[in-house]
Amino acid sequence: MAERVSLLSSCIINEPELAAQANYVFAHGAGAPMDSKFMQTMAQHLAAAGVRVIRFEFPYMLERRITGKRRPPNRQPELLDCFRALLQTVRTRYSEPVFIGGKSMGGRMATLLSKELPGDVVGVICFGYPFHPQAKPEKLRTEHLLDMTMPTMILQGTRDALGNIDEVAGYGLSEAVEVSWLKDGDHDLKPRVKSGFTQSQHLQTAAKRAVQFITEQIITA
Image (cartoon, rainbow, N blue to C red; front, top):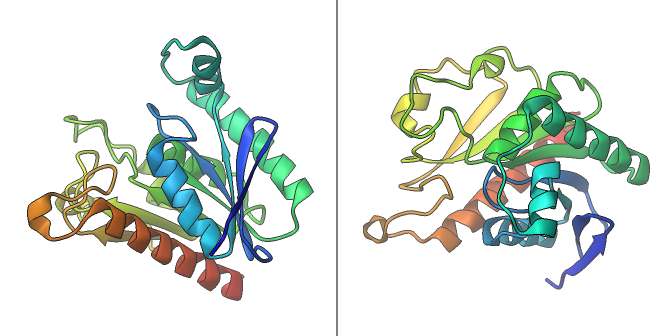
């Protein structure tokens, strides 16, 4: 399926060939920008399946793009303010149902933001959720997921260093949170060669599961 990609202001918008069934506001992770290979590939897969994907960058990443200098992410309130402002713009501009989410840190910000947005978004979709910092499994980032009420899908590699399948099984996540596992995938959903899978296959599978989740939520909303 052909795809039209347009750059509007500071966002990249991947438009479906035909009418969009939904909008997905897609936030990047802590270390890679909105046009990273992962973000680009996932946006293309989703757009090909009828989802309009709006990618954006948090202030620190925009500054890095301008200056070329790496900087750490903004503090959480600033990240949420940025996400919140863009979401308001998207809801004003487009009439289709809105989903939010992101890669790693971006997905975490989406889950936090969703707690204050009953009715504003239909669901949350995260790719490689950072359940804890790498090599620090005791520092969990799951408290707000224990009583989550908004439908949430997390696409996670079974050996993700920020939350693998054995660790996540014991977290007691809310029933509203569905974790969909990609066999042998790491934090970027990349499996080892010996697994018999490829990252390309896992990204396609993750996109298909995300689209199925979107369709189901639209039907039941």
